[in-house]
Length: 188
Image (cartoon, rainbow, N blue to C red; front, side):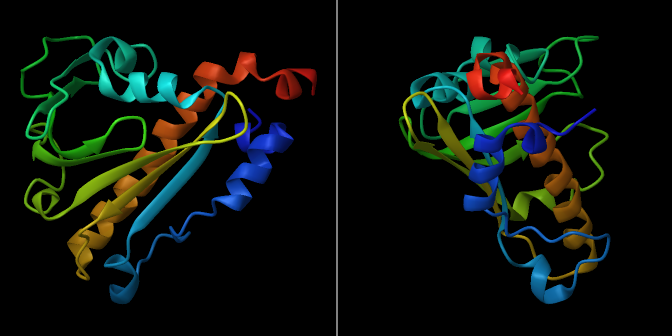
């Protein structure tokens, strides 16, 4: 399957313009592990729609998770479950606490309770995520996900690689949701 980034010129240009600070490769040096992990993508939808997809249960279920419940307020919880083989609230539920937000501009959160089988349970509490939403040309949005708080040790470096892959997957799923609406992309 051809990458979404390579099939659409406007997406390729956007990706280059919003170059990720994340490094490639399996090993992460101590100095790099503590740096922010940045993943960005151009989404072919207006910022109000992209914001809704990140901040409502219905919106999130439309593109990323099987179950979601979001209490959009400072201190509110974002509860998600990727698989639909159980209820929201079981040991496979991910619970994030909202640290701050500016509607249609920024959302920050921190893992409050990871799923039971999460491999970095002891380390995830030290990091947090900030998602930026930047309106672009009419009907497009740059989404930039920044992971912060990684330490410069081996365990945190492995967790950083886990989130690097996960954040890239997340933004690709969001791009796919709106792929058909991109007239330039569909013509290629």
